[in-house]
Length: 169
Image 1 (cartoon, rainbow, N blue to C red):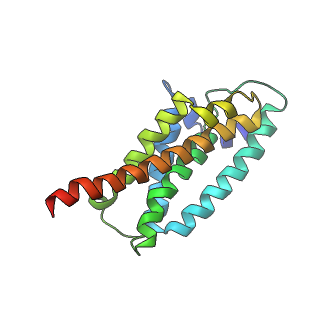
Image 2: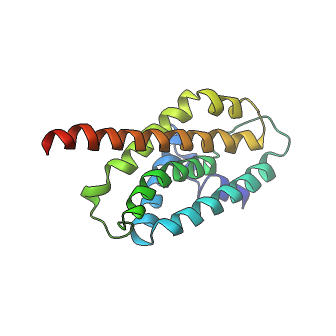
């Protein structure tokens, strides 16, 4: 059962780049949760998968210092953290559910690409968490990558709206 959880239904067994596959599934499912159920259910799902991830990764790895690439529940948690940032912007404006895909696709796409960038590059706190070499570090590096991806996606959205849309208006 732990393997099913940690590989997110065996998505983590897909090759190459299981982390990218896990992130892709996460962004699609996360977007669907936010689109059809709303921002608050995405927050609840993010908290739940993060808590479950901390427990299940520790239960599977124990005291091991490995970070098996097949474990992708951490990617789901981190990707959903990244998605919370653009989703919050829509929710704050009353646009949390049922908005046409053509209006919102840049947010999830930016969150996905930036999350993968920070997860692979591992700057600052992301790398520090990764260097823990324990179950907590497996989860924490992706949570930090999600935070950084979310912040940068909001900054880019702001710049887009100020610069590009400002020039058109």
